[in-house]
Image 1 (cartoon, rainbow, N blue to C red):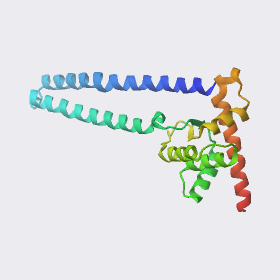
Image 2: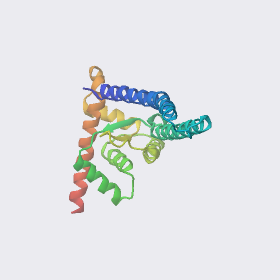
Image 3: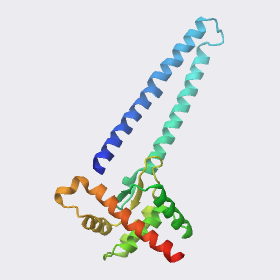
Image 4: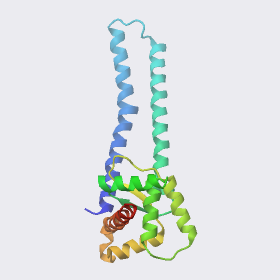
Length: 201
């Protein structure tokens, strides 16, 4: 399955989960609270008069809206569309993730910045320094989506083009280009990390 198809499938499943969450939070839960209050009142709970029920609803709505606002805010921070550089997806195994983390920690960098600098150093090409600076800045701002098994790295347009060429992705392979780029970038980054470990020893 191609990277594009996997991304679309993930987005569809996430939108379905979000839709269910909204239905439960803003539809089913308030009705359930109201029915429980009516049932308890009929059972003799005299303290559940209309002002108390109204306060319960107000408290619930305040909490639900606060949680929803916080989720939307965090989702906006995670939104890669705010970045100006193209993104590539790297599916790091635990060994390569540990190597990258150690390399980044030694340089006091975020792993995404360290991954970009490795690719920037290992892939020869010519481009304006401002493109490199923009990609470094985007990697500083990039928030990783934990739990999805995908590591995101912002790169320059020239790195993206070079990865396409190195991956051998022709026009007929455009549906597979994301996975091809990921494999090529992982191989380059893994070799570069191994070389640096050997030099350090």
